[in-house]
Image (cartoon, rainbow, N blue to C red; front, side, top):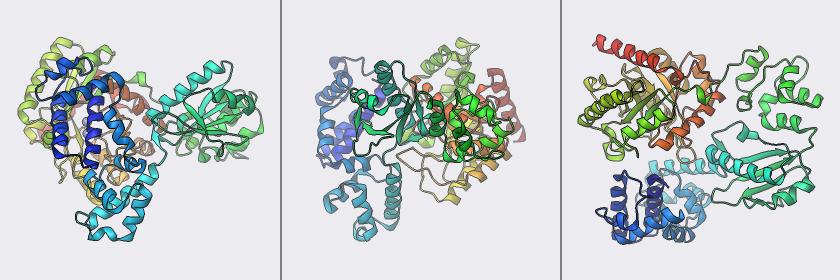
Length: 570
Ligand SMILES: [Zn+2]
Ligand SMILES: [Zn+2]
């Protein structure tokens, strides 16, 4: 178990302590402990209870909680609080922007236990007379409630894929000869998933008793019917699961019909719709069906009906980028700011994975309070360490980067002299997120126009299922990136996946390059590149248009040229 996982359980506990009005002293002792633990860079899981007690400032009770978390994966204190808290309230806790103090008031004074009650209360106008609930707060609350309703029943793609594979593994062991495949949004790799949908060539009568043997699944008999088995997962992450039984003969036909969006199926061929073409005959393979329709084969994840069909009809579909095409990893954090691994560890792991280069971009000084952002002095210290690591690890190269906060007025977080010391700059917004579309767009475009900006980081600041991004004029921002030669990042963190895949193709149409960046805060974060690749592929991203598929020398000379252009102008 990583330090981050342990600490996040403790942070979650603090929320419950606050919600339940536990005495200030206990809350403060937890908060202090969290601060101390965040500075510990050795693995907490590998420390014995005695060793944990040796850490200055950690009391006995918190050490025993840490010990419990690392051995059982759970904290009994946290579990108790969860049981004592209405489920609807726990759900509301996941949304950023409500605040535990306000939630406590809503629960205690108004009996709010779920989003539906909260919606009614907000609409009643009663909150306006309550201290701490101004008009702005109430409007904000209303939009969070709408967002909460929109998120209902959805889980992250990364979780859905893992759970889906676990279900598959059980199924394969029980029905080794069956044809099984994901369909729907899971096969199309959407960023969030509302149901794990599985197609299987086993008749319902035989399937039902088999599914009953899988612990992970629970059937909803009321919702199930003759053509589909419906239920949910039984573990902590709950999501709907749907099975579609079919015959072996019709497996491919159903795979085609149940994978694609309605828009994809509605594509007009010469004399009929694509869906009618599928239904016309029995297909042996998906390739055959596309070929007979005069279409190039569409990978499952692009079957959205958004941009792919006109290209498939002209046999001009792009060759989609693959994970193994990536040659380097940009936008990563180390212990110089809020990362879990040291710069040397991040670099060695990246090299060991076979990559040619690493771009380190720790947080800038405006983030000093919330993400241990770096003042100039530490920036130079880091750059010196990079120089010596580069000698040691050559030909592997660490590029000197920064994730510079875009300040409220759109300026970057250092003066030009400091900015000129970096190989690349990822410009991102991390604070003052409450903006209207005009303000947000203007702020971003000012940063894009800054000649030091190399990449635009997580464009909308969204945290999927937790926080809506600030509203932005995507087209204006894409145009500005094209004008100023800024590369748009696909932030590959499974909770961000920002820029949204729906805009990737538009960015490519404007001739932009994109970079698939994991925003890794620890070595394990490099694995998130995969989710960024999924997003890129959905938008038609190719190897050529993906900046970090370029070899080290090309990336190096790109950065150098861009920097030279700015510094010679000054
Ligand atoms: Zn960021
Ligand atoms: Zn970052």
